[in-house]
Every structure is written in C-alpha cells, then in structure tokens.
Image 1 (tube, helix red, strand yellow):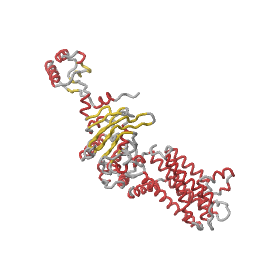
Image 2: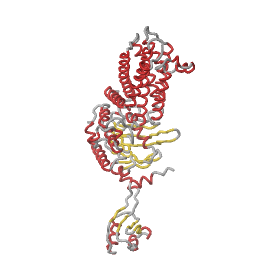
Image 3: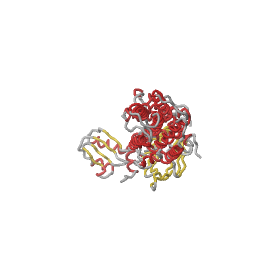
Length: 309
Length: 242
C-alpha cells in the first residue's frame, strides 16, 4: 500500500504499445512528495508517453499508475484539479493576451493563484496585454509556466521548461522550481538540458527504449561512472617520467595532451593530488589549475543510452 | 463540469471570434451583403416578394457560417496550436469545452440574426407565421453544421481545414437555394443539392416563415438526418492532437 502523504507518484510495471512498438516497456517509478524528479532519455525513449500517462492524456496498456493516490485515466477529472502541466511547446491561443489567458485558466480551478502575482513571478508584467502571437519564445515558455501554476498544483509536470529561454529567464525559472519544491510541490521534470537536471533534480531516472536504465541522485549516477582522471595545467614541456614512476602507472597514463595541459588517468585521491603537487614542486614548475575529472551527467547519459541509428 | 469555467471559456472563444476580422466577414459581412445585393440591387426573380425568399436563405447562410466555418476554423487552429491538448490537462472537461463552444456559436448567431433581421425589417420584410418553428430549424441546422465543422477540424490539418471549410461555404451558398432558387439549377445538380444540409435548412426555414406555414417534409427530414449523422461522425473521428 502506498502512503499518499509521502508518495506523490507511484508507477509499477507500466506498459504502452503503439502498434507493434513498445513505447513503454515495464517502467517502475516512486516519486516522493516535494521531490524534483528528472526524467531523462533520448528522443523516442518513452519519456513523453510515460509523462502523458501520468498527466491523464493516455491510457496505459497495463501496470499500476497512481498520481496523488488517483488513477490518472479513470479519475482524471479529480486529478486535473490538483496538477499543473507545462507542455514542451504550444498550448496557448495566439490571439489571447497573457493576463486574459491566466484569468481564463483561473476560472477552471477552485482556489486559483492571483494572475497578476504569477505574471510578476515569471517577469511578464510588461507583456500582460501583448497578444501571445507577439511574445518571444522565452516569454511564451514563461507564460506556460505561470499557467501551469495558476491552479496551485500539488504535482507539476514540466516538459523542457527552459528551452528557448535566455540565461536570466532560465535562472529565474530554476529559482521558481526550487522554491516550489521547498513548499512541498512535487515536480516531474523532463529535460534534455543535463546541467538543468543536475542542478534541480533530487533524483533522476534515465529512460531508454521504454525502460529505466538508471535511477538515483545526480551524485549517485555520476559516482557510478567515475572517469578517474586528473587534469592540471602548468608550464609546457615538463618531463613527466618522475611523475608516472612515482604513481606506479604506465607512461601512457600520464601525458601532456595539449601545450601545458597534463592528464593523469588514475583513480582520483588525495594521494594522487599530493604526488602531482610534489612533482611540480621538485620540477620548480607553477600550478595554474587542477581538476579531478569526475564524470558529468552527460557522460553517464551517453554511456547508458545507446545511439539509435 | 463547473459553470464558471465553461462561461469563462465561452467568453474567451467569443472575444477571440469577434477579434478575427476574416471571421466577421464570413459570419456577418457576406450574409448582409447577399441580403442587400439580391434584395435591393439585383433583385432575385421569384414568385412573390424577393425578401420572403431571401431572408430565410440568409438566415440559413448565417447559421452555416458560424456553426461550420467560424467554429470549425477556430477549432482547427486550437488543435494545431495545442490549445485543445493544453485544456485537456485542466479541470475543464471535454463536455465543458463542447458546452463553451456551443455557447460561442449561439452568441455569434444571436448577433448575426439580430443584424440580419434588423436589416430585413428596414428593407420592408415582414415575418410570416411560424417564427418559433423557424428558430427550431435554425437550431437543428446549427447542430448539423457544427458537426460538419468539427468533423473537418478534428481530422484535417489546420490549413486544409481552412480551405475546405471556406470552399464548402462557397459551394453550399451556390447549391443551398439561399441567394437564388434551386429551380434555377440544372436538374441533376438540383437533385443532389436538395440532399445537402444547406438547401434542406434554407427550405425548412422558408417553409416555416411562409404564411400560412408550409413545412417541406422532405427538407426537414434531410436536415434532421444530417443533424444526427454529422455530430456522430465528428465524435467518432475527431482527433485532439494534429
């Protein structure tokens, strides 16, 4: 039995076929109240199908799905009052104006948020009465976000929320998402922006070919795929023989990859750093920069998701 | 389905409709133009008063323009722009959206009929006997043409829908016995035209407004069949996403 006080979304053995193609092939998810949960995966991996089933747009072929304890398909009317959805693109009437659109959507909910407050939150005050067809791509996305918030949702579905936004708007959007999460709103974020997922998400599921291929916090995911290398920069042309000998690795594992940039392929540790510092000290060479090459989410993503021909 | 949401949606649809200049041309401009041109400038030759022939015709034309063309094109673009999809995740249900669109069509028709009947009265037209019956036929016609408009909107791409809806409007204006009598059409074309919803609506309304009332049973039956068939087809084939 799922506890609806702590579990916002519960998915077991979710399957969905389109014709003979398995779009979703047995997905399990457990998302807690107030979590920012990222769903990553290549195009066609089954992300959108999964999220659209959670939103009540599509009927699953089999599997158990509960959002806020409700079945999104058979109890969609009750659920829709409690969720907010931001589509990847489109959704708004080009002839309406932002304030008008927010007021219209406010009429659909029992206790909606203030349209003016939300325009202010997403920084669209100056465009309140500009027809939507004249908004920029980023402004359109910000209005979509405000509309997703108008019903004071308990679960918020965001599909590529910052695509087309300038860096300032993106930072604002990230702040909004973090603030909502602190208020206990559960957020399901689909994105191709891996830095965004790393920054915002407490947990991430990577989906490929209709299945979850990895799941965990960004730290857990990247920790599982350590690239184990250390990069430092100093004066060009240093003789690295003493370094690789002191580390007990082969010469190829320790080389100058570009003028003044040295890469040591070894598990990163404080001993390794100390050896590098000693080496530079003895060579009387400066240390300009030093970085351990922990894998990024991008490395994990590329390693786990196969290239589709 | 909450009334507040439905009314808000109907209000938004109506204000959008009134903002679309091309929609006003089709819903108000052309019916008034037909009435003035064939009622005043180039009077249509029929037995009796040309206005008694023309006014029911332009009322039918008005219904066709709002229920099929205006509703259909707006809904087609709603579908193209993802508006229908976005509304699908709000508490406004599909039946709520349909109710809002119905109210929108009725609001536009109220404006159309007020303007057209006003102009007709200024031209000297006097209504015959069965006014309530005429409104009933216009309502049945609205259901038939809304079904057709939504069938096109829910199956074709937005641009194709735009072209087909406007093309049908023009074709049915010529084949609908609206601006000139069906008897002026060649026999074969006339037999087909009589089975189409436009002529059936125009003839039904015309019969209702004659004094004494003279119901054309065949036309009414044809109209009712379309009013059942087209919404059923629309319900079956409508796709919410393009």
